Length: 103
Picture: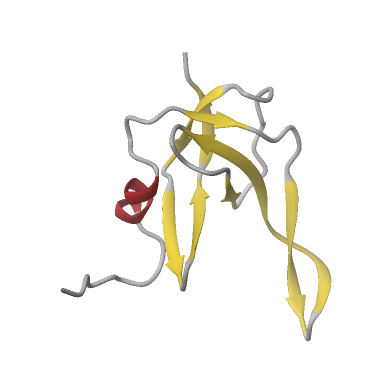
């Protein structure tokens, strides 16, 4: 049986990999800039920021943010706001709108 997948980012795809009831922890202390590439060369134009996280039962994963976010201390329990994921081949890419510290 084949599973029909839609292209692009989706909250449903994110839930397949990071269930909503799973605790997520921040691993990064600094954001990494993502820049636009033209003709195989990086430009000065920033297209987003990335940071590493881990959830119970998963491997560490990177999340892209369009805007700069304030990262909490390492190993802080967080909630990723509007987490979405996209499957490309055998890779999964995540993006979110922000970070909220959980208690």
